[in-house]
Each structure stands twice: as C-alpha cells, then as structure tokens.
Amino acid sequence: MEKKAKAMICLKDHAVSFLQLVSSGSIDEAYERYVDQGFCHHNPYFRGDADSLKAAMKENAAETPNKTLVVKHAIEEGDIVAVHSHIKQNPEDHGAAVVHIFRFHADRIVELWDLGQPIPENSPNENGMF
Image (cartoon, rainbow, N blue to C red; front, side, top):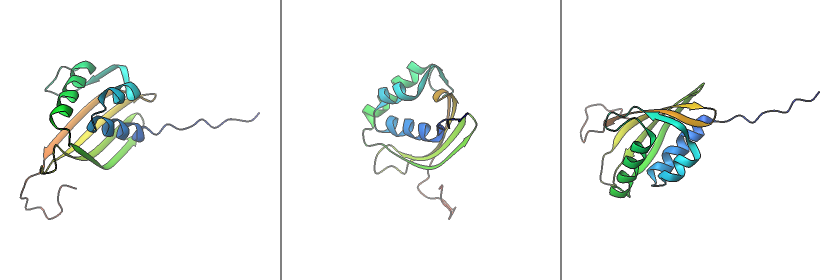
C-alpha cells in the first residue's frame, strides 16, 4: 500500500503573510485567509475579540498608509509561531521592534500576542535592535 505524503503546512509562512497583509492595509484579506472564527488576542488596548482588533488595524492602516514591516526572524514550534519585525509607521520613523506570537489550530490563527519596543534615536548599544 502506497502512502501519500501529506503536504506540510508552514505556519511561519502563514504568520508572516498575515502580518504583511495587515501592514499593507489588506486587513479583510488577512482575516479571511488566516484568522479562525474563535480568534482571541491579548493586546491590552482593545477588547480581546477579533472584531475590535480588526477595527483598530483598519484605523491604523488609514492613519499610516506608508507603514512598513520587515521581518527579521520567524520561529515555529508546534502550533506556536513567533515573528520578530521592524515596523515603521512612516519613512521618517525610527520604528519599533515588535514580536508577534501566534497560536494556530490547523492552519488558522486562534490566538495572538504582540509586544513592542520603540527604537530610540540614540542608543549606546553598538549592536542595534536587530
């Protein structure tokens, strides 16, 4: 009996694609492709449901249409993915180092945490934030 190889889902790719879509303003598409119906998040500035975070993302996209996201690292372990990125709200902004932690069920995002640290204009650390 021949076994068919099941295609492996790369959750890192899903997480990165979700962030790229969101940062480019394609929030509806990001949610349709990747967010599970039972999604929850842990951002302390918004209610913990999908709709409140989606609305905040849309508001941010309208206010900062020139936002950029550059992924520096993506780590996948089981159903958890961590993505370390440099996000700038506009070209003049120093930006922030941000870590998004995703929990997946199958290939859908069911839970999200995000942590950010502004990049200072002057830092004594010669290694930089990245």
